[in-house]
Image 1: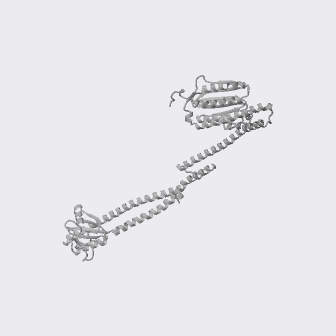
Image 2: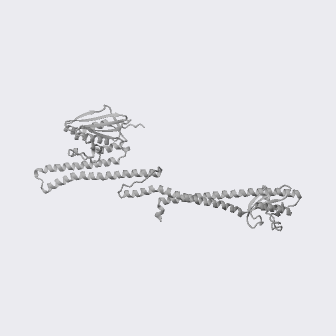
Image 3: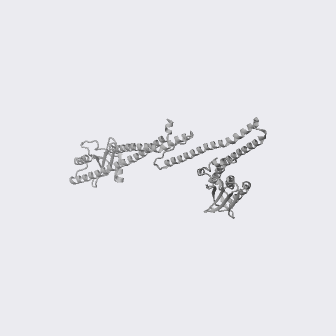
Length: 485
């Protein structure tokens, strides 16, 4: 039962029902007050009109024949008006003593009774009296009573009354109409609320089920939004975007584990094989130095792989704000990277062609990270360039950005390999046998660094000429100077 009331759909539906009931209750109270006031006002107006008519007839009757207020003629007039209107009437003297009434019985019990002094005082003071009262015992139950003074020439008062039950009956008729309308509207509203709330809560239920699937490792479920464009649909769309991202991350994680396992397996197998051969004596004495050299080379390769993975981890832990919070000279970074690789470039008999500006080129970014990008690109160019050819480095400004390109002449990268060249551990088949020192992380790390800087990198390879180009945002201030807004 508790879990039933925890359901979002049930909570929303109950909330709608309670709010509707509260609104109906408030409207009912307001309607009851207004309808009762309206009925009371209508009956009061009718009684006032009756009193005026009765007063006019009494004045005319007494003026014509000089009859007093206690006469049978007056009683006949009152009885006739009572039959026509349904109101009961009493005529009193100036002290409140009942002199005549609208009852047909000549010996009616009202005659001789005294109206409460408060009622007489109210008529004298305010020109009229109205109240729900028994009028000092004149009636067996409460009635709506109105008192007015008699017309000029007659000293006394006229009290007109109506049964409270008649007013209550009229009011109950209004109340029944309201109740029937409220029930009909409630049924229609609950039916609409049932489907509307169900429709609104369906995406939430789907998100809950999908989240459970994601927890089990299944990232295929998606939330259906239909044609809706409300906030719930927007949340569902955002949830689907998150699911796509999770699915890509999971796929990337699995690929990373598979790639790392493969990259670690090869050198470890080589190291274990040669080490076992040295230990069990199957390797001749004259080849021991060669085996040890291979073990050392594979060990260094493992170290580079681990170092590359650590670099990836460190890059992912930095925010774009941290990476772009400083300013440095990109020209200096390019020149230092060329100097650091001078021995490798010379060993492959490569000529270096540079097209660099004479003045500094200041950009926003992390100098160490961008140095790693330039070093990786130059190292790749020197590694895969055909010995005796040239290596070209360019740096230029264009439309508020600085561009760096590194070109070499060697094997053309196959067209189908270009989209994958920046993936982790990716090596084209043509270069795998040549690249024993690489682990397939250099270009991936370079792209990751540039992505975090809001920069881009792309490659072209055509007719043996391969060119890597990246861009960075130019700075408006020198290092250690306040940056312009």
